[in-house]
Image 1: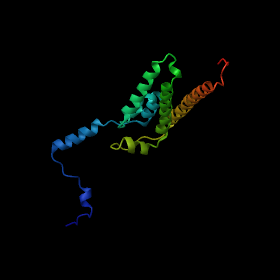
Image 2 (image 1 turned 30 degrees about the vertical axis):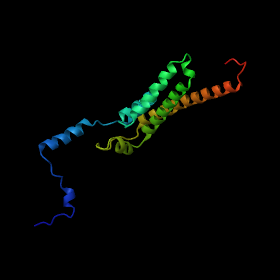
Image 3 (image 1 turned 30 degrees about the horizontal axis):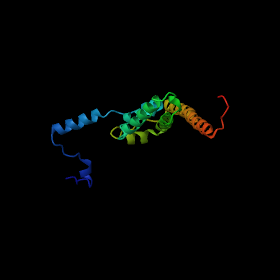
Image 4 (image 1 turned 90 degrees about the vertical axis):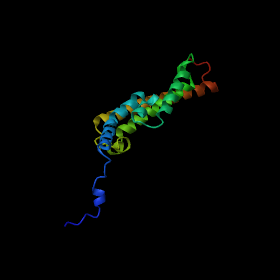
Length: 169
């Protein structure tokens, strides 16, 4: 008679409670969709200001970012010069943060992304040319948005200090 392997308990599958338990596990695995790194990065690039990528990645507190963005947009829209309000500035910060996250998601290693967002799936994502192009676009657009926000703050400071009195801009 062949001796049992010392770790035979680890090698044998766990006993099942019946065919219903196997069906429930198969149904649960089939309902969890694979989350793509490229799709998450594009969502962060295009709609990161309202946090759509957080909903796609099923982050727990995604609603906070979305609610904050909608409140900022609502407050800014109530003003006659909506693009010159603190609420619009805060919304711009969210947009810049979304573009930064797009670059981070696009350049994240496939193994790390899948370990964090697809733990039940085998690793299949990797950094490829489309991911690099998404990261480049997000860095370029993020730089433009960030510089615009900095210019907005500088203009407000200069106006409040009276340095622009008499100047037409």
